[in-house]
Length: 277
Image (cartoon, rainbow, N blue to C red; front, side, top):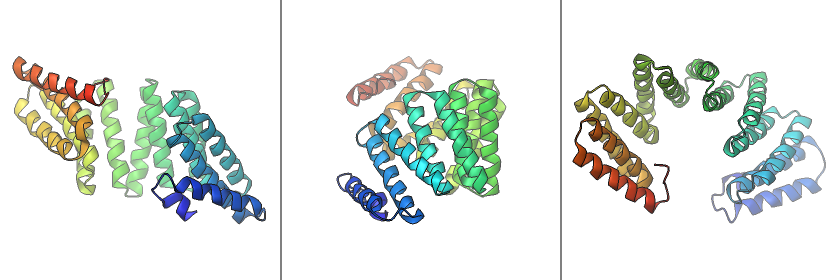
């Protein structure tokens, strides 16, 4: 199981997972061997999902594992498997089924009194409701994730919850809470040195200042985002930042710089086939 889950060579770990599956299938059908069989099936599902892009096959694996975990009352495994199914539906754009799966995972985590698992489920559900423009339901789930994350002192999840609540504030037109939530998320990410999320938060805060006409403050935050993007994000990150800088200079009516950054962003987007930007 360890090799199947921890080898990072994609040419090796699926083979070890298949070996574990075959071994456990041929062993006595006791709970221990059934659990390892289910673990192997989850790994095979992950391989089908991420290496083969075969979502149908992946779902079949995850459901098989889910049934075994329920049979042996291994709720941690069952919650993981059904959560993986939710993620599959999310990627396929089947939001109602994703919500159903994430809700089942939430109930299992609640039954186990697994606060961290519940936090993740609340965030997943919030994102799905937000996708469907059910702002009230999204906000409720993000707030539940925030409460629990503070209870268990999980700074990363707290930051994620504040970040998501800031995005809800954007949709509600609540500029005061938008900035406050982004700044609280920023404090969390600074504590744990999560630079990927720091880049996004700096950009968002910079654009708020820019929209308010506070261009000097905006530039401070946008330059911080740019510094991280150049170091970590490659062309995709710098493409996004160039688009943002283009908009920033457009707001100042500095059309030459706006065009310059826009053209750079367009060229980068074409080079990496990132044309949504």
